[in-house]
Amino acid sequence: QKEVEQNSGPLSVPEGAIASLNCTYSDRGSQSFFWYRQYSGKSPELIMSIYSNGDKEDGRFTAQLNKASQYVSLLIRDSQPSDSATYLCAVNLISSGSARQLTFGSGTQLTVLP
Amino acid sequence: DGGITQSPKYLFRKEGQNVTLSCEQNLNHDAMYWYRQDPGQGLRLIYYSQIVNDFQKGDIAEGYSVSREKKESFPLTVTSAQKNPTAFYLCASSSSGQTNEKLFFGSGTQLSVL
Image (tube, rainbow over the protein chains, first blue to last red):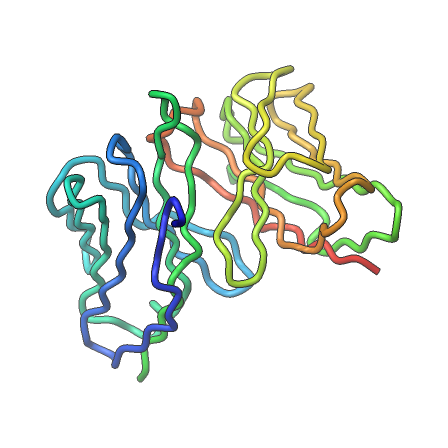
């Protein structure tokens, strides 16, 4: 089992729809969770961080965290073609009681169709 | 403008050759990182440094070496011992290296084997 797991996709949604991206992680003690967006051939950029259970909203983006079930999700409302990218989930897993440097999932490729 | 500069953008390595990837930051960040990304994969940590003259191995350090002689610079050498070096290499930095911090990425170096 991968330590940080994402559906690789590709995920296609029509313009204006809600895109839902999911991520599960292996370590119940993890404390910090991030979503990065990466356009093809470019470097990742942070779009959301979340540290507590529940929802965190920023514009059209909502991150949802459920530590008991060990998943974190990203919702993109009113999806636009410019949202087409690969979305990387990153988690600071715990090893021997200490937080490790971030572990990234393999990413979900999202395509928003005009 | 503050940021991270990676060079070169493209690099070709011959059999048995060592090559060095440059990474410079002017964000006054203490922590710097090197990640490797293979096609369709997430980022894997090669090395990281939280302070000048000190660095730690990441998950895939074999065949790589780094130095941190200056706060601003964290070059990565891909040695001939790395048998499968073709990948996209990303340098990143964060303020102090705490695992809840945002990572800032450079634009990446694509390394290929001739």
